[in-house]
Amino acid sequence: MNNILITGGAGFIGSHLAEKILNEGDKVTIIDDLSTGKLNNINHLLNNSNLEFINDSILNIDTVDRLIKNTDIIFHLAAAVGVYLIVKDPVKVIETNILGTHSILQLASKYNKKVLIASTSEIYGKNSHVPFNEEDDRILGPTTKSRWSYSTSKAVDEFLGLAYHKQNGLAVTIFRLFNTVGPKQESRYGMVIPRLIDQSIQKKPLTVYGDGLQTRCFCDVDDVVNGILALSKSKKAIGEVFNIGSNIEISILDLAKKILQIVRKNNIETLTNNQIKFVPYDEAYEVGFEDMLRRVPDTTKIKSLIGWEPKISLDQTLNRIISEKLAN
Ligand code: UDP
Image (cartoon, helix red, strand yellow):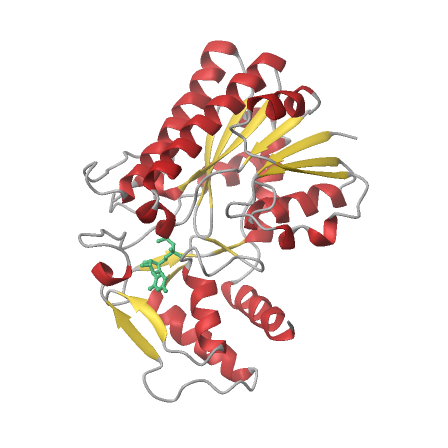
């Protein structure tokens, strides 16, 4: 039985990861300060004697030192996430992401423990050459636009992780998550699928930013968690960076229409007029906000190394989220 530490384990992806690891029979310790994570996400796991939950910040070195000392593998998912937060509280985003990862890596190095670091497709910035390969250039906007601070903070995390591997021989694997979706993802941090689903259930107009022609590839959190776990078991993944995501694109406008269709199929009345409301980016985020038109991962690397590819379709995911929301 392994002892696994998940930082940010009460968050959307971390809580799904914790559940899967517990189901495999390993012990899980979660450290989460519940800033964006929620106890609700792990309530159903708390009576499992193999789970320990620590309500603390990863910036608390004494706690993290004790936890890492007693762990076998660290999944480092704690981070300040979501485009809203980046625009509203850039200090917190930069400090949490850079200082938090720094202390995790320092302590993992002290006790020689394997670390998997969650990174993001934001790394590629506004590079318009899709699909994004792990070796592609990062193209970012100026420092006066706070959106780019998130991408930069995660890039520093990646540099630091790779440097610890190269210089100290620490076992580090980095995975870049693209748009990940599934039950428990919250709408209040701006993520499009929970927002549009909540709006449609509440019979509010669906807010589509810009002209809605921007596309994204959405990957079910179950597929994502399987990918992360498989990477943690692969020796060849050490010292490497991997994209994890779906490569099936959908425009945000088509996504909104699909959600309306599914909600209607569930016999829920939706608004008949003005079902979709186009909101200019300046109003949705901040003046001068730059969105990515397309964001598609090249997943050749993870597929050829461990055979991972997504199995769950967007329709399946949307149906599952909508039926779970309607049941609550
Ligand atoms: N978006 C939208 N309406 C919303 C929230 C988001 O049209 O209510 C758009 C957003 O501008 C982006 C896409 O949906 O083009 C995905 O946004 P999200 O924040 O989920 O992910 P990311 O921008 O990080 O890919």
